Amino acid sequence: LSQKGSQNGPLSDDDLDDVMADIELAHVALAGARASQFICDLMKWPGVEAAVSESGGWSCIENIASLIVEVDLEEVIPDEAHFLLLSNVSALMKDLRANLLASTKSEAAATRCLNDLWRKFKCGKQSAASLRRNPNLGVIRTVLVEGNTKYIYPSLCVPEDSEDE
Image (cartoon, rainbow, N blue to C red; front, side):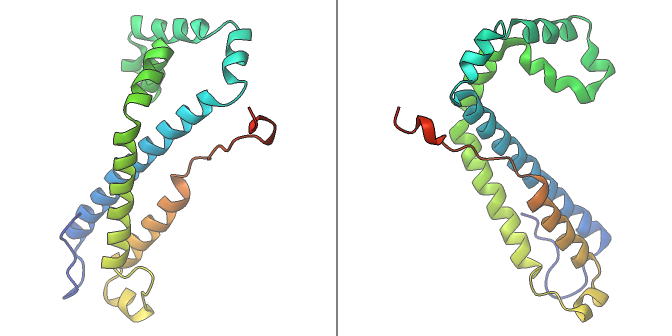
């Protein structure tokens, strides 16, 4: 958590950059942890394994991902490098499951950091006068609020017809 932005004066642009870096890091941790949990839950969802098997398994996707690795396509299109993880779906799932506890701890730490920043910069109590004196506080509030809506993953619950199983 950044120590920048004491209550004594306006937050400089350099201090704002440090706070934004803290927020970005926390958002990345949240996104990773929530995505991992969602994928693990989804893969355990009733019927998913059967549907994958009926469709021929993961081999088609793994073959395409392996081809991406062979031709170094991730070097040309770095935004698509995450598809490399699909070159071995069972290894991916094993890694995700093995790291769920660490992901949960990361999510909790990131949430704590964001909540601390919210309180530190009084994002819930900013007056027009304080925002005029220190407009960077409004930037912090906006980024924190937007992050609350941007880094949400759906939660899966047990379907009613399979609760008894």
